[in-house]
Amino acid sequence: MLELLDHIGLFAFAISGVLTAANRNLDILGGYIIAFITALGGGTIRDLLLNVDIAWMTSFSQLLMVIAGATVGIVFRKKLRSLRRTLSIFDTVGISVFTIVGVQKGLSHEQLAITAVFLGMISATFGGLIRDVLCNEIPLIFKKEVYAIPCLLGGAIYLLGDYLGLGDSAWLLWLSMLFIVTFRTLAVMFSWKLPLINEIN
Image (spheres, helix red, strand yellow):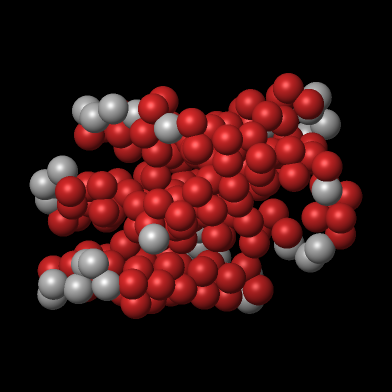
């Protein structure tokens, strides 16, 4: 189940990346590169931190999903742009999946509980961080946007369920992902913001 969701997340993030590239008027090669980095960057950093083999380097299916997502994003970019907040939708799906993948991978390598949650957040957000830097934008994670917090809280929910012995249950997986999607979607809809450092008295 999680492997399927992981591939769906890669597909969604690749679309998110290529749409960002299109918005910055990059060429087609640049679009595929940004899609690749968006989809696989966070997981690469996670695996490097864990000192394990980088997942996509031995998975043809992961690479294929990124290429497919980027191609769909390029071919249907005009229609996707016409959908309200499309970029945010694909980004949200991606972060919900990769948060849980990262937490699970941290736990499987016997990391501290808090470390596993942070690995989930890194898996979910650092690909987008690198994407935004390369596209000359301030990354969402550094703005007022409520972006990483849903990942941390959703990862904590999954962690708690795993601690209670429910880690293999599908409903815990879906509950954690649904929490992240809902929290992030509401944050976008209602413009929830974090205070800036200079706004704190």
